[in-house]
Length: 364
Ligand code: SF4
Picture 1: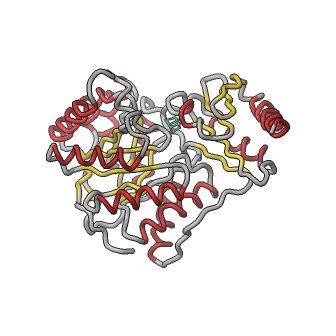
Picture 2: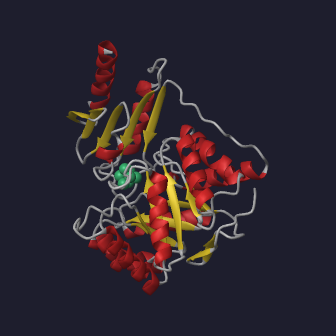
Picture 3: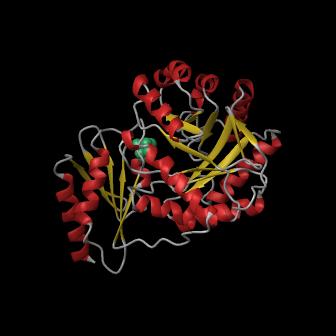
């Protein structure tokens, strides 16, 4: 693995970038208000080798639980702001890093320019000794920029204009080749900025691990990447598999066993790793049932089926798939492309999906 040439930034008790080893990270998939379960997951992930563990915070109540989680956790903690950047003030005193998504900054208080919101986040980070991550995601791009790399570069330049250096960048997509090309483009223009690498919605093992290998190993072999997360659709009790997969990737790079290409088979299941926002605990089992039921389908052209855990990202991040399912509390929403086909019970939705695939084949 080549030496990183980026600047080094502090995140809690550890640093990334510079000549630091690549940090492994993961995320709790518990309800954040279930403090005991969240603390248990964070500590289990830290014991497995996670340098940083992310928890989801959507509400003031979630943010308030961080006081106790912080006291009981051995892990360095990070929070993803999602739509509500205003929660940053409540979150920052209790975590080591905050991630914001440029595509989500426009949701709350849309009349306030994004620059003002980022200025506020930087002030909060400085006050509370936090790092920031600019987390660009191909499935939720900034409406003012349809290019993920440009969006990341714009926000990184804005951080420079504020004199704030303690930030890293991630540019994720569900397609490994897109992750490789986007991060190479960014690193060529901003070799000073540490990159957090990952494939979003990589799916279940073993496919999710193969997709992550095909994206992360070539980049790491080129010295690109200061921290990695392998996102896997697995139950919370198995989240340490993300760390184990990340460690295998680092070992592969160290020994030159680079997987540089991943080709989906007849069916490509794109599914999220789940988090506190999952609407129904049957989500992971649903993703597995979709995989089993569609295993023999697909033809010359790969059939992409997206399975998402919640209403936050489900509606938008299923748009690019041939078929999309996203979980509600009692029903699963089914789409063909961007067309909503309806909401079906967890028991009935597989049959309805198979019928929709069959109808699509007949009509094409
Ligand atoms: Fe969490 Fe929803 Fe993203 Fe899945 S799609 S990881 S449940 S926010």
